[in-house]
Amino acid sequence: MLSDKVKLTAKEILEKDFKSGIKGYNKDEVDQFLDLVIKDYETFHQEIEALQQENLRLKKQIEEGQRRGTANPAPSVSGGNTNYDILKRLSNLEKHVFGSKLFD
Image (cartoon, rainbow, N blue to C red):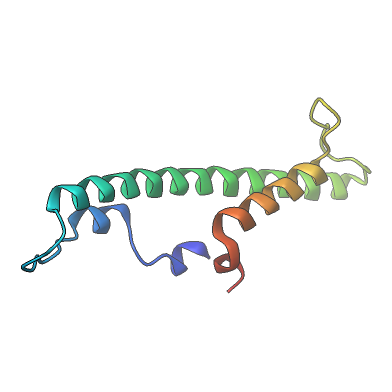
């Protein structure tokens, strides 16, 4: 599962304290950047959760359709998209967001 591969939580990023040296980084700049990272991190986490839920829902629809013996278990989305197209797009999105990490 993906959560096993993620090393940091948004809370850990927020609470990270860096030591400063003689010519260290500007603490305010680091804090502002980490705030952006945290927001993105939380957004990605929410998107992942939503996509995983949608993926499970679509898989259940496919299984139900197969049990019923229908060729197309779920109604297609307007615009000519089929469940296969949606799952393919979802898979491509996961590959884009996580890259090779998803398959390690």
